[in-house]
Image (cartoon, rainbow, N blue to C red; front, side):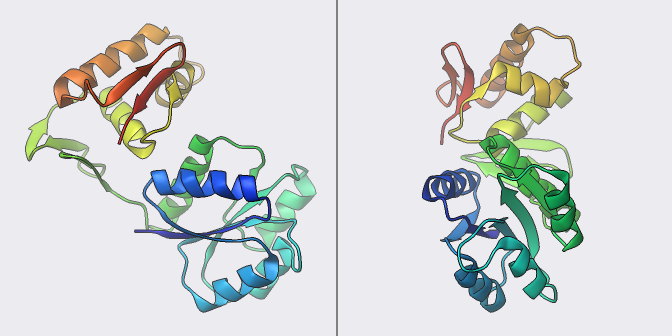
Length: 217
């Protein structure tokens, strides 16, 4: 399991990040000031540090300068969206930069992208008796192979990565089919129906009225 340190002094944002990451299967730790964060980073090996810039005692830029010899992936979290801060953070060695506010699905995507670049990304996911092997592009239920179309496979992976999170039809369309793909939301409904049928997910892949769908744990 990947271990992620959340360094964010806003308690509500910290809780939001913590819940999002735990639902996605990550182990997390939290701290709320720069001094504590620096100590923890130096004493432990984290896969990723989610680091706010504006922190009490020591800001995110200072922390980055002090941990340059520590091989730890860092994603900056900040309300500052100007180019100067972004460039400074990346030049100091940050792996990515997310401007607040952001959606849970974006956070997970950014974390996965960094893990992928570092060669640490998960290639096999498990949901109840369903196993999804990303490398082999194969799905097994109770040990038996289930044939899915490419879009059904992508949709399943997205649901598995966002268990207990409601995903709108528009969000599913933009991620799986692309923003420029002219397709009706009924296409999403059809693919969801196929997943329910092929993987016996009728009681788990729930319809959220006027929103979209949620895969429940």
